[in-house]
Image (cartoon, rainbow, N blue to C red; front, side):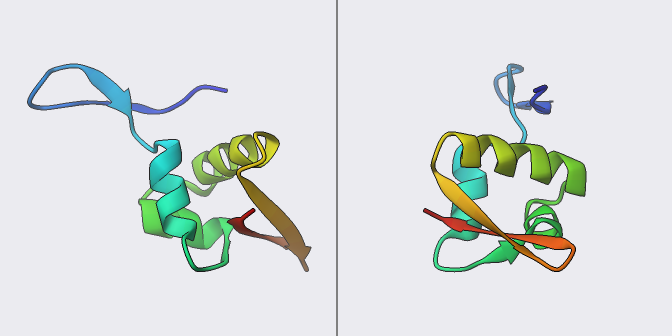
Length: 75
């Protein structure tokens, strides 16, 4: 998957816009839908879903289907 990147104004280098740690921080002590994670990160829902799915494949988080939504939480 393509990871969105942003240029750091101080170093001029590109960094991940939504790092794994940033996504995990959003989920600490809570359960959130994909849309809620996207809102917390300030990104598009598709971007959040891709990052969340990657973390789930790596075994760092789990998801539960609730109606038409996925709810994500730390494993």
